[in-house]
Image 1 (cartoon, each protein chain N blue to C red):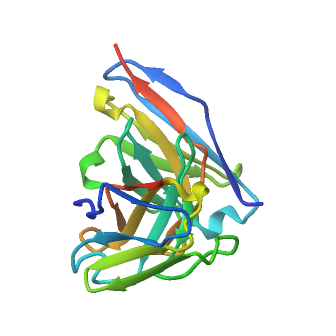
Image 2: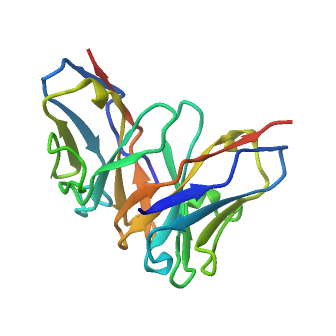
Image 3: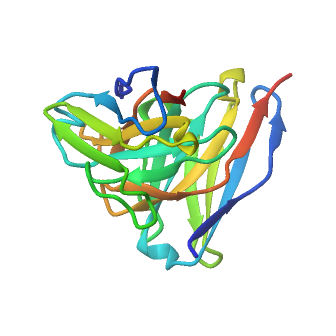
Amino acid sequence: QVQLVQSGAEVKKPGASVKVSCKASGYTFTSYGISWVRQAPGQGLEWMGWISAYNGNTNYAQKLQGRVTMTTDTSTSTAYMELRSLRSDDTAVYYCARLVRVAGWFDPWGQGTLVTVSS
Amino acid sequence: QSALTQPASVSGSPGQSITISCTGTSSDVGGYNYVSWYQQHPGKAPKLMIYDVSNRPSGVSNRFSGSKSGNTASLTISGLQAEDEADYYCSSYTSSSTLAWVFGGGTKLTVL
């Protein structure tokens, strides 16, 4: 079955960087995109960006431009999201999700990775 | 990108129907038939319930349906069941940026 499995929880200090992985299985990795969505504690979903697993093209949410980088490793069917210069308001659960079709929908989602930013 | 507008909460009794609205602009909801809906239980990842405004993925109950009129999309759940109690989020493709998406603020559904 189609599945996305993310890396484990992280605790980082302000100013540090974090890199979250998302390993895909059950489908042809390069035929779909991967989007990243985060959810701060008790808050709603926030779209962070998208990467094409086919050619590596990316688009990031304006508020994260310059701090976020999304990459893929097609040899291992794994997507990565790196967020730099972490602040306390970056504390959130980070989800990867398969993007079905350009301008499409997100299905399925990974289990989520909690990133805590604290001094 | 600004978030889509959803009611903070809705409620209904078992067996009843409820509708959750999702209001955007002509740059997102009103401009494209690319609205999707997600269900999220506490501590769990979101689950796709509706895509492209009104299409239901295989495995999702036909009690869930979607529609759109102008800049407002709606999710209707009929025959409410206890397990429907969850948070619901709408999402839309948006032309405010190349290949970008926006989410609603989420609606907490309580089954009384």
